[in-house]
Structure formats: structure tokens, C-alpha cells
Image (cartoon, rainbow, N blue to C red; front, side, top):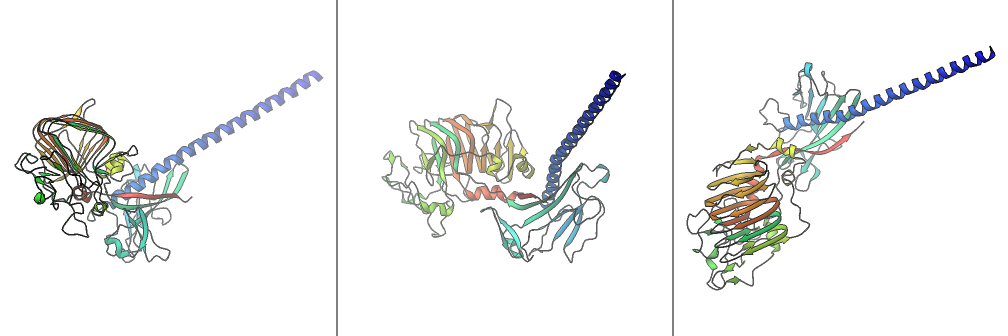
Length: 491
């Protein structure tokens, strides 16, 4: 009996111990499951907050007469301007106090998927946007896209700079809740290129009567399509497009048979300190009579930067070779930059966006397989060649805006021209032969993410002329977007 009693007690203790262990394991599993669920919800709640911010940015970028528009269009701005966004019940606007109420784009309460505001108005929980103010609420923060800095100023400064807007978001997902303050400001696309022609590496071989012309001096937007960066002799080569004798961006009135000195520029942006001459007006070019460069040709002029002049070519490595009658005419500030440290950015980085998706959300791309002849309209062309193929730019086309080639590029050989004002961006490489009597002409900039390996033959010519005005007036003037300046969780 004693042995049986001991065995019974031992058995009970073992069962009790196992029960405690099982309970502990169950508690641990439940706790870890709850933690995992909460962590997943915490990640999801950030996505919810980002969706709220996307709604605000989208609606503030609409035209003011759009019923979905959100924004303060007064001049000067009103420091008390505030807009609340809810899912359902709206309060009455108070235009005297400049407080307004809007329904969310996600206003169907039966199908709400992202919980970033409230059904009924709650000043602490509803989605809200307002100006970023000074401590005494008399001045507004503005954003300078050139310096990428915020600064305080009077409300009337809205005519020169966009204000900084504060978006207060209370986002929920499951049991997770985050209160987030985001700062945004409206930005113009500001293209930052390094030269008239940029590429990771450049190999350019030309034979016959081919002449590569590259000019990094800042050209005016009204530069005609058929203007050459530099023409050594008024009648030796026809104008781009083969419409007659060439017109150059330099005035060759001072040209002589020996020195061939260039006179005042015709289409260069003038320095503010001199209304007549571009600072580098005494550039020399290749003299077809003496068969050599004039020795006093200026390689670099600090004054050029005052009118926005850039290098003619910027690359990590270059191999430029010519044979026969071909000559190179490459000018800029300096003429050529070859540095291993040069980085060719992605297109969205070049345009100032934080991601390709943000860029695509804000640019109305025209997806085309070939380019039309449209010299008057500013358009944004996106060309995606099939895998293993390249985009052939047709002859006889004049275009303005952005050409984004999502792959490799080549130019059709034959007679004619391909002329563009704005930005030509090649995500892949430019390879192949430019042959026949074809011209490639760019006013603005061409950027090649990959390499350029081109053999130009016959009477083909290649023209690149940098122009900040062409980039701004054909690209930047129509493109604006709200940029995220800061993001802070406050609980």
C-alpha cells in the first residue's frame, strides 16, 4: 500500500507538471502569435498611412475647379486654412475661419479597406491637412527646391515659393494604431543633367564626311531646329535636315581664311553682365583650310556658368576617333569631362522623384512604338522595345518633351533627320551605325544610362546642343508633383 500510495502521488505530480508545461507552452504560443499579428499589423498600418498621404497629394495636385481638389488658393495664403477629411458625416464648412470638410475618396463605408480617418468628425483622429506655421502662427514655412531647404516667410510669398503642408494621419490596422505627421510641398520637375551628352562610356567612330557636333553652352529655346552647334565653313556641309546652307549658333562674321575665329553667338544665352556677347564668344573651331585647331581656343570659361553652361560631353571613359574628312566640334564648360566618378542616374532621379512609381504617377506618358512628327506639342514619350531588340528612331520626325527609351536605341539610316527639343533618356545602350545622309539633332540634353558605341558613316551627322530653356519649357513647365519632405511618428 505504501508503494502504491507513493506511485499515485508521483503520478499526480508528473501529470500536474506536464499540465503546467502544456499551459506554459500554450501561453507562449498565444503570446508569440499575438506579437506576430501585432507586428504584421504595425507594418500594414504604415501602408495605410501612405495611402492616406497619397490621397492628399493626389487631391492637392488637381485643378482648383475640380470638386475633389484640396488646397489653399488664396494670395496671400491664410494661416488658419485647415481641411479635414472623413469617411462619412461632414461638418459644415466655416469659410470665415477657413476650415473645410471633405469626404475621403474612399467614402463608401461598406467597402472601406484602408482605415486612415473617421466616419464622424473628430479633430484628434480625422485626416487633416494644414500649413506648417511659425510658433506664433503668423508666418508660413515655404520650400525652395533649388536649395532643398525650408524657410519661414510671410503668407504673400506664395507667389514665389510653394508652402509646406502638414498632413496629420491616424492610421489603424487590426489592433495597431499610429499617429503620423507628414510634411509635403509642391515641386516643379527640375532636370539636372551634367552635359549636352552624358553616357557611362562613349565610343564614337566616324568616317567619310561625318561630323559630330556637341555644344555645352546654354542655348536659347528659340534656337531653330536646323541650327548647328558649329559649322566650319558656310557652304561645305548642308544644314541639318538638308534644307540649305547651315545656320550656326555662332556668328561667323569674324571668320577669316586663316584663323576662322567665331564672332558673337546667335543663339547662346547671354551673361547678365553683358547683353551683347556670350563670355566665350572668341572660341575658335576647326579650320578646314589650315587643317588644325586654332591654338587660342578656350577650353574653360568660368563666366559660362553664370548663364548655365555645362560640359559638352560627360562620361567615365571616351574613345573618339575620326577618319577621312571627319572633324570633331565639341565645346562646353569644359569641352569634355572624363571621370570615373561620374554616375548616370535613373530617369526618376534625374527628374527629382523619389521612385519610378512616383514619377509614373505624375507624368502622363504616351506609350508609343515609334515617334510621330509633332514639332509643336510638348509630350512625354515612353518606348519599351521587345526583349533582345532595340528602338529605331525614325527619320523625318521633330518632337518636344521627354523621350524615355526603356532599352537600347539606334537611329534609322537613310535620308532625313531625327530632331528633338527637350530630354532624350536611354535606359540601355546606343549602338549600331548611323549611315547615309541622316541627322540626329538634340536641343536640350541626351543621357544614356549604359554605353554609347556608334559608328557614323557616309554623310551622317550628330548634333547635341545643351539648353536649360529647352529642358525647362518643354519638360518642367508642365510637370509638378507633391514631394514628401518629412515623416514622423508621434506615438
